[in-house]
Length: 142
Ligand code: ZN
Image (cartoon, rainbow, N blue to C red):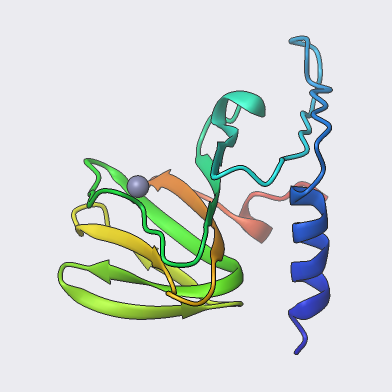
């Protein structure tokens, strides 16, 4: 599978214990962090994100996020890094496996579950719906 090398790289990074925050002063043009394989890591504060929240989530086999939730303004984009599970969106079950990407509208009620026999690791990218004004070629300066 072509996604395997990318997944392996991401998982290797996620298992590093060391945390480095190079953007420790206001003059830095970038920030970097290495994420331990905790149940949940939120990057907004760690990387001083200004337009998104990104979380890395790890659920062991049989576990779930312990609540159903929706959002006021933010859509969420999820991708599965490893394992398998499902998300229930407004009562509809969507199976999830490595390489899947899914966008969920703010108002949708959602809850994530690991499979009974396999954990699941996923990234959630949270951004304000309809906020993107330019991207890729429109926003690039060459
Ligand atoms: Zn959410």
